[in-house]
Each structure stands twice: as structure tokens, then as C-alpha cells.
Length: 186
Image (tube, rainbow, N blue to C red; front, side):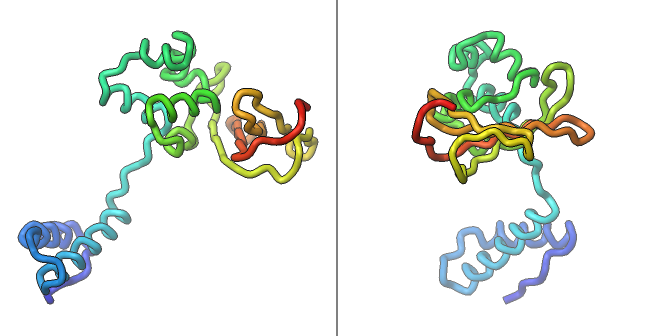
């Protein structure tokens, strides 16, 4: 079996040509095995050298809307406000847990794509917005050490922990639990 490592663009072109030639090979045959090895090598090379940057949540929403011929008006209907949709698409409003839930359930956009960190200009200052899913370790509390607090979201029963910290630019993290907290509001 003639197989070699893929280290350069020339090696990649050679391997892609071989893959094309072997594309119809039957699994379990020598040619089929060669095809499997070559596709694995090409995949590893492309993962390392040709990585496509991940789209941020706003770009994911825009791409989804474009692919399905949806307008800002359609987004406004989903979110309940034209201004909210406009501010979200212009990165002047961060995605909220409620928005993520609606986009995920109504439009079937995977929540993992909507919870990636992204930059938004909120209140005139650029902020890094992150949504991180975690299990709460205890009941709601105020914390002087983290500068944050736990609150119960009445609609979903989820717990949101919000931390604001200064690091050159402002950063906002929203921690979302997977399980509701028992008991009343705090």
C-alpha cells in the first residue's frame, strides 16, 4: 500500500487525487483500506492547517436567516420586539437565555452554536459575552468574592449567575444551571 504522510500542500493535492481515484473502492479491499487511510490523513492535515474559524452566535443567526429567506421582521416576531431583533443583529444587545431558548426550540438552531463567546457593543463599550452551562453547587446566594450573584429565572426555573469583571475590556459571563433550584425567590 503506497501511503505517505501529508506535510505540504503538494502532498495534500496528491492525496486528494488518490482519494478521488479510489472513491468507488469496496470496503475491506486493499483499495478500500487505502482510501480509509488517505481520508484519515487528509482529515488530520486539514484539521491542523485549514481550520475554519467558528461563527459567533450573531453570525449563526444571520446565516440561518439567509439560508431560509427569513427577514429581521421574522426574528422580531420570534423575539417579541423589532428593536430587540435590530439590536441583537447589530451587536448592541447580548443574547439572553430566553432568546437562546426561543431560537433553539422554534428555529432549531443548536444551543451550542448560540452559547459561544462573542463581542457586542453594549452601552457604548465593547464587551465579551459568554454563556457557560454549569450545575449549581448550592442554593442562590450573593457573593462578594466573585462580584456576582445567583438568581432564579422565573420562566425556565434555571439559575443564572452573572459576573462582571474588568480586564482591559469589559467582560460579562452568564452562568446557567441545567437544573432548577427548589424553593422561592431570593
